[in-house]
Length: 153
Image 1 (cartoon, rainbow, N blue to C red):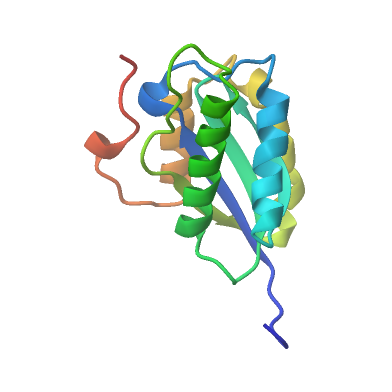
Image 2 (image 1 turned 90 degrees about the horizontal axis):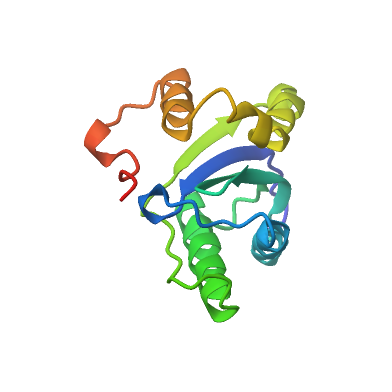
C-alpha cells in the first residue's frame, strides 16, 4: 500500500496440542527456518523465534497487509503440514487452538529478543504455564483459565 508506513512489533506464543513435548531439538532449527519463510512470504519480518519442545515464541515486525489471526493460521497450518509431510514424528503433529499475541515498543525490542533467544535457560526456572500466565497478567489481558492451553494428556 503506497504511502503507508508502520512499525508494528508482535510477540506471539503458541503451543503444541495438549502441550505435548513433540518439537525435537534434532529438527527444531529447520522448523524455525520454515516458519521464518512463512512469515517472509506473507510480507513480514521475523525478528526472533525460539521455544521449547511444547511451545514456540515468534517475534515479528508486522506489516498491515494481514491480520495477526490470519498470519498465525498460516504459520500453524503450514508448519504442522510440513512436520507431518516430512514424517518427523511417529504421531500426527497438531498445534493447539489459539495463541497469545502481544505488542511491543521499539525500545523493548532488544530485551524481548534476548528473552526469546534464552528460552532454554528461562525454562529451567519457570514452566510454560506460569510463563504464559505472567505474560497475560503483565499485559492485563482478561482471560478465562479454562481456555488456557489444554493440559498435558
